[in-house]
Image (cartoon, rainbow, N blue to C red; front, side, top):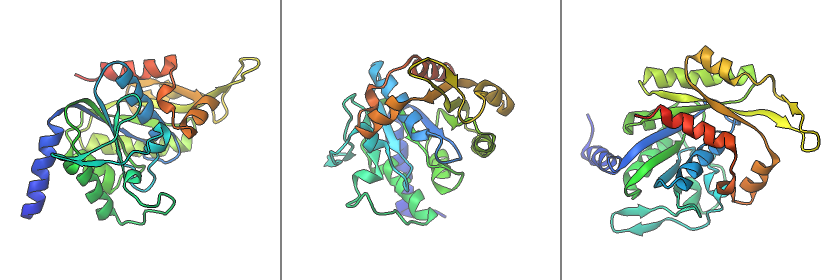
Length: 262
């Protein structure tokens, strides 16, 4: 039986999430495949398309979103909760790294603490009225992803993989979890699909054959598109300017994602 505090928190979550038209999670099941990058690129494209966008970094133990966008401003206490800082593109961002005193220290928390932090992000943050809230989930299928799926009325989920068969097998667990929780899979993104030689233009499939479409078909989910290895991505992310990255394949991925949203 839930105590009164939990009931009040659930009501607050429902109230805040009710002001957001579309809530989309980005998951992988496996770390290191570029889930945070895909979250940032989707949010940036939507913001530059004129939508009001929020980006929730729910990867509690490995937050990277603020660094990619160059956010140094701290959240502030407003009349109706904590007001998250915004990127140059106007994306409202909340991450644990924005409230930690020392970002070099490890966050050594048990599952229930991580889940509670995610719930507080949903209940205490004054997101306001948004068209889209993109939620960057941590890898795996444990407490934090489960909390988001249970507490937030998600529109759907984007799943990120890389070309390695091992990575895809683990990512399929995230797809299976989403289907079990009755969360619609909006599609699969294959990151680090290939590299293009800057001198000759030849395409190299460094991590294995670019089979994103075939993998999506195998998992019975839509294929949204592929992202290559691009040194410009690392450069911009390190400099806090990932919001300025624009490529046709980013547009293709987001446009395909939006086709699955009712």
